[in-house]
Length: 214
Ligand SMILES: O=C(NCCCCc1cc2cnccc2s1)c1cc(-c2ccc(F)cc2)cc(O)c1O
Ligand SMILES: [Mg+2]
Image (cartoon, rainbow, N blue to C red; front, top):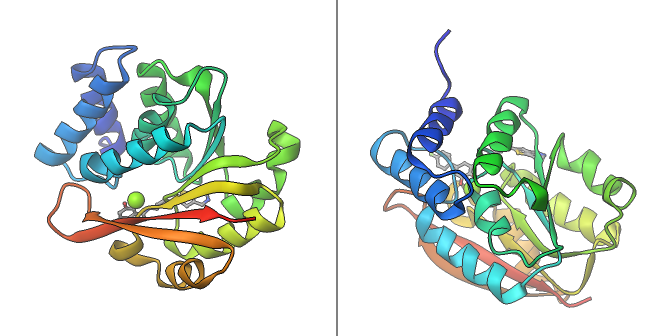
């Protein structure tokens, strides 16, 4: 039984990145995905947009839906102010196991809570499990047909407050048409589209930033 792509990605991080240096972890993953094997990380181009939104929001509590190998987890966590927390949900235990090691290699484990399971079950438990009142920032990067139901679930569970920012990956490719339709037409959100490209390719993709108005 050979290795999986996430395991090969982790080996590239352990070989080429410096422990405790998040930027070197990011660079190692981008190099691996551009020159060795494509993987569904948000990537460097969309990652820079993610960085600018996270820096602008400067969240105390952040939620990531879809950890995968932890690339965007590291991008977000490295920018968080001291004392803030990022909760990241992953459905696939094999992905979660790799992500935990990538996050650890970056030295960001104290800022990150990695939780395994489906978002639909876990979101209603956020207050009880982690004592979260509300999220200042949410990065949606999981099943594309779960973006809409989970945005509604966050509202219903009072996990969003006036000014909370949702940032959604892949709104063009693979695409999240129902989510875009809802969020762009809802009076409860102010949305903006950041045109970019599918990670490590020339294919169009983009991020949708939506501010909850309360
Ligand atoms: O599927 C994508 N991401 C989701 C996979 C995670 C599943 C989870 C479900 C779940 C449920 N609950 C909690 C946690 C989680 S994690 C994805 C796919 C592409 C892509 C792939 C092929 C292609 F040709 C073009 C684009 C690009 C991307 O940037 C992606 O993000
Ligand atoms: Mg994505």
